[in-house]
Picture (spheres, rainbow, N blue to C red):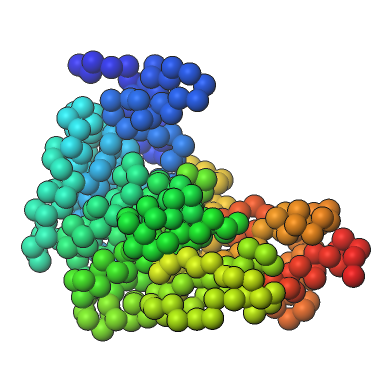
Amino acid sequence: MGFDFPIEVICEGMANVIVPKLEAFRRGVWDYAPSKAPVFYNPLMRTCRDIAVLALQSYQRIVGRDLSIAEPLAGCGVRGIRFAIEVEGLGSIYLNDINEKAYAIIQHNIQLNDLTSRIFASNEDANLFLARYAAPKKRFDFIDIDPFGSPAPYMDSALRALRNGGLLALTATDMAPLCGVYPRVALRKYGGFSLRTEYCHEIAVRLLAGCLAMTAAKYNIGVKMVFSHSTDHYARLYALVNYGAKSADKSLEEMGYILHCFKCFHREAHREMILAHNMTCCECGSILKAAGPLWIGEIADKNFCTLMEENLKSLKYEHIGSEARRIVSLVKEEADAPATYYVIDKICDRIGVPTPPLKEVIDHIREMGFRAVRTHFHGRGIKTDAPASAVIKVVRELAGLK
């Protein structure tokens, strides 16, 4: 095949592709092999790619026509090739990567899957590639930005290259800034302070969404978040774009802050771009800490999630993994739930009681007249409109305390 580094053929979804043989680049137990390989490929992102297939198919069914799509940071081209094979109703697919070796692998994978008439490869800077398609009649219906790090440097170019009504997918892997370890880095990159709370992965998604909304507003573009998810090492967001100053203004109304009390678990969401608020906790009087400005609105659309679930019933998607199915189901359940979530284990540690079964906590909160659902963000997390004091009361009662 002519490559000067070890490769192997793998099967992912319905595609056969060549990728770097990662074991050849691992020098120690803690080595992150994908970053050492000459071309980036991360097998752990399989679930992310599974969900991307479902999301793109759902969007295609909403639009009802052939779509033009682009992946400006394509790596080995695995995602784009899976789109071509697994998603119905796609027209032209453009895969780009600035890495010459990645470009060579993409070309080979296109030929390997007999897709030369549908997929076009290029080898240039991602922003330059997107700028070539910014003219009105050249724009894409769907753009997938999946960088190693932050997608912020590519947002402007992607928005300008996206048609009215188009779908934009963003991945952020720089979770340390987004999860509150480096809040000033988050401010620099995403325009808002992060906060190291038990629900920091949701804050990460909301900072990413807020950055997108603010960037889009510069071009009189509004955004609607239709799906999002997060795991340990990345945040992922899907957003529809709508042209027009009114749409942009409506999106900005969803910007605000999350205030958190580290003493009693109280939290508040405020839809104001300027934080003019008494920064003391209404429950215990402690000083509140703020995350934001960030997106306060919904970060998933229940109807879009239903379409994704319907896709999973098709025999064509039998290969979609169980983790992707679990995430889609949980995101649908929590789509219209309030912002933030409670981690029951953390509450139990604080008040010094055994951890009760999650189902019992949810049932008791519902019996009190509040909403309560599980969240995909954390295996022991609960989203609820109940105040922190009510959640703590339930946990204490289940532990036999009054």
